[in-house]
Image 1: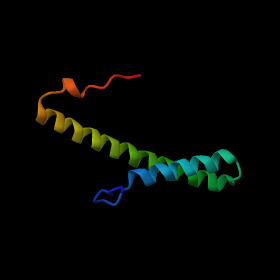
Image 2: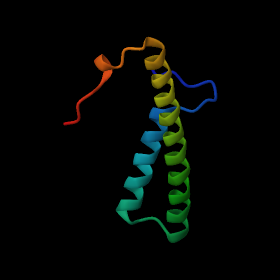
Image 3: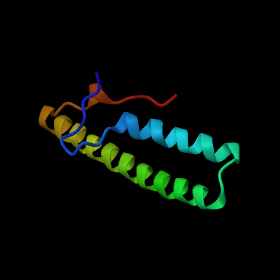
Amino acid sequence: MTKKKQTGFDFEQALEDLEALVSSMEEGELSLEDSLQAFEKGIKLTRECQAALKQAEQKVQVLINENGDTEDLEVESD
């Protein structure tokens, strides 16, 4: 079960909506006006997702700082 933030923003749903917008735009069947509206909505969703990720990153940083031991939390990039 996915929990929504108190603001009502659902990150997973926003990603699904963004993927649907991209798919519909890639199909090329939208009118110019509909494509512009989809693009605007996509930009809004992208910004909201970026803000949610930044907030989550800040929370993780606070938890790391409270713990004081960051060596065990480092992740290697593939």
